[in-house]
Every structure is written in structure tokens, then in C-alpha cells.
Length: 365
Image (cartoon, rainbow, N blue to C red):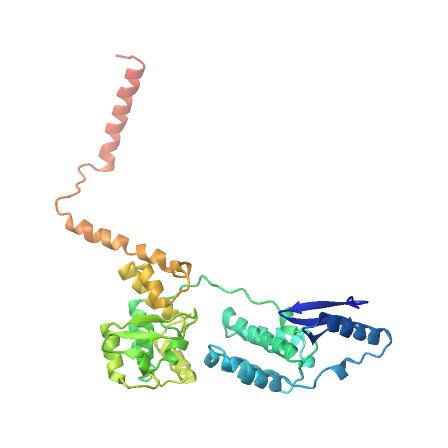
């Protein structure tokens, strides 16, 4: 028998078959395995239990709390993934919030209320990150047969993100921020301004990937998955020399929580608002383009996977054309514009010429 009976369905996710069915207004999903025949049999069994009043969902659900599942998620999934350093704070925070609540006790409303609470202090993109990790934890729980219900996070809509945001610091703001920076933050701040490196790349930068003599920083693991080389400018070279160099070890020796704390303090002291650490990447890119006009070089330095990602800065390449035109203007000494007549003097002559033209057209002498 390979066809299920009643109100239920089979779903294939990758190579794994799942059964979906409803009971008393609630939806249930169970992982079966790679056999479709066994999936049909499992679904028919559940539907029969429901029809005969012998279905007790609590008996089919492992008693596991969110905290327990979050620990499993970290140890057996997220910890081994790229970007694990930035993932842990999200998993830790979610574990603190939902803690000892069983997975089947966490509702769509619980998740919606939590994410709405985050909107007061976090950007839509940051809120969506928490949403994504919540959803991922529930999906892993289903895959690992730790939860047989439906993923409640999948029913909550993501927030609209402003992907066109391009906030960057002026020269004056950069100077103010550097002046206000804590000595431990200052080197990382300069490096971000002079290279456009991501926060995760700065935090994980090791001395063995910095060649001060040749003047290059080597990024071996990036968001795009590609290795890249970043030239070290003279100013950045001086900052790096003040820190070392060493054979190996963290370049900035700055935990993320301390970086965030020092950065927030510096922004407040410098009077800079509406600015995030990632905007330092925009700051570098914007000033680089305005001074070099070299979009392909910028793409290489930033490590963008496509040219389209770098084109958002293209309009800045033309922003200094007016300045250049004024420089050109100043050099054209031979051209000396002169105004001989005031507008009030020009108007009578215009009216007289128009009168003469009209008389000629009418052949009036």
C-alpha cells in the first residue's frame, strides 16, 4: 500500500519523508525516513488513531526544553559552521529567553511577542537574525526527532529590511570617533576604516595572516567563501607595527562584547547617531570610490561575490566631478566672463528688435 488515507499528507524534504496531519485544530509533523512506503504506513497509523480516539500527541513528543535543544543545536550543528563566533551570542540569548519551556509549549504568539520587543532597540536586520536562528533550531529539532510538531517560527513574517541604507562617516566624524575611541578599540577602528573588513574578519584576524613587510592582509575565510588579499596603507601599517607584529595570535585581542561596549561609548562621546559597526565598511568603500573612482578594485578589496553588490557605491564616483570642474575652471585664466549690460538695459533693445521684425513681416515701411 503506497497511498495514505484520510486528512493527511506526505512531504519530501531532501531525502527524508515527513508525514503531516491535523488533530483538534493543531498541525503535526513527524520525520519517518527515506522510505515512502513506511511514511505512508506511519501516516495511516496516525490517522487511524485519530479516527478511533486513540491518538495522544503528548505521548509522541519527546520531553525536551528549548535550552536543551539550543545546546544540542550549538554542539552538533552551529558550532561547526562558518561564522560560529557570531552565531553563539544569538543562540545563548534565545536560550536565556525561552529557557526551560518545552518546544511544544512555545507558540507563534510567544515568538511574535519576543521579536516585537526586540524592534525597539534593534534594526530589522538584527531582529530577522534572531528569527532565523529560532526557526533553524526548530527545524533541527524536527529533523533530529526531538519535536514532532510544526515549526512556529516559520509562521512569523520577517521584517522588511532597508538594504539600500548607505550611511558613512564624513572626515570630521571619523576624526571625532577616533579621538573618542578607547585605546584597545582604536587599532581595530582604524583597520575597519582603512580596509572595509567585516567585524567577524577583524575579530578573527591572526598575525600569521598579516604580512606587514609586503603590506598585505590575507582573508582566508570570508562571507563569500573566497580568499582575498587586502593592501595595507601607510597609515594602517604604522598602527599594525605599534601592536606587533607577532608570529601568531589574535591581532587586536579584543572580545566582541568589549568591542561593542567601547564602540557604543565612542559613538556617544563623538555625538554620532544612526551608525552601526558595519557602516564602517560603507565608510571605507565610499571614501575609496570618491578618491579613486575604481569600482573593480573596490570589489576585490571588499570581497564582493558580484559586481552588482559594489555598484551601490558607483554614484559616489561622480560626486567629486563638480569639485574637479571648479579646479579646471580656476586654471582657465584666459576665460574672463564679463557682463556689459544689466538685464534692465537689455530688455528695451529686445522689444525694439521684435518691433522691427514684426514691421518687416507685415511689409510696413
